[in-house]
Figure (tube, rainbow, N blue to C red):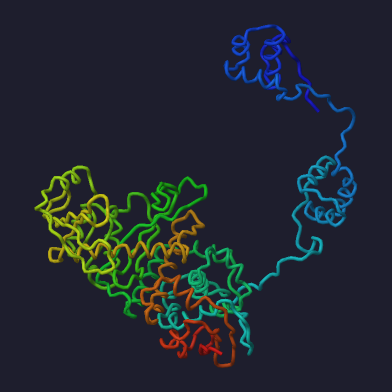
Length: 579
């Protein structure tokens, strides 16, 4: 029903119509009936001359439709709502929600939307129902609930069951050798009587190893007895526990676990530590939080809210060995020295060689690296003055260098070697001007390594792309960018899990002949992503893997012949079979 109103100036109502349809009518009437010139009628009613001519043309052609229509008289009939109204009211009096009412109407062939049912109830004065317990709701099929995760409820009857994650059990011998439970205890990670700390970390790590994108996706696996057995619990922990666990961790505990993990990897010989690739990675945040800072995302070529992480990768084995996502703006330049302090704490001496991009740090920090005796290799920013200097170099100054890499497209770059001094850096630096590398602009390398040949330096910096490839695999397979928190400390735990997952995959890949350099996604697809049957006995747990094309490589590596006692299985031995 329209709201009554009073018109204070009736003439103005017709001279200055407010509604678009009325304005069209008054303009056309002035032109055709009152003989007002076209330009004057257009100006009076707010049209341009051209648009008014188009309006007149449409009116002559009958394309504008009717200007007036008769108002309906008497009560209106709603063809769908009215026949169902008595039934809706009767169902609501039975304490049914609009969802229950919609289901009941569907069975009686009254198809109504939730909005229509809500409008009927509101028109009749019914309020919203209070939240009901499950036992107060009508009987209907509901999702089955898994048991609560509790290590005290783990039982060991002899039985056999299927699992979708059979390949995951190949990581268990490595977790035992690396003593992950001891590392978690030494880092003082929190736990409960129901879910101890080591079990919680294994549950979170299992999601990384199986390429499960988000913690909430564990609900797809809560009935997988194989994942529960792998973790050491009766059922896997649910989303709420896994999401909230990282909120109980601080930088001290995360740093302690990272220290222990790297020490364990060094004991396995996968971190020779001769040279390291360093890089930043911005993890995008798509929520609404004004305290999340903006960083540049190279994948999107723009700045947007994100959490900045700093990572280090061993240049020889491509294992991530350092990660820190608890960074704020203005702290980027200090991260190279933070890694130097970390590695010095691990080994007693600074890292011998670092390779990083031009944006990683400043010339002042480069001087500090040189003072510590750390060799570095980095790009120099291509300022316009530097590009002019390269362009003015005579042809005779360039020297051709041969890169002994058969698969490389550009094998004969041209190089000019110089000694330069930079602001905030005491002493000379070695600078290489390089062209014919396949880039439009020349490449400028800076280093304090005075002994390496130009070819060796060029190839070493080209290998820095390995960390880019590793980060791409961490994003696509280990889901490093699946950010679910605006708190950087929470993200640090997820980044640490990514670091641990890359180490485990590298340990496994190193034993597979021909796949030593394979990425985690390739190892997972070819060797691990398969169902299995698990047989639990009094003294052992047998994992029956299906026949696959790459099983001979697992057999040749001796992985299926191992007999590993698992401490959280009450000493039962893990054994593999291929029926």
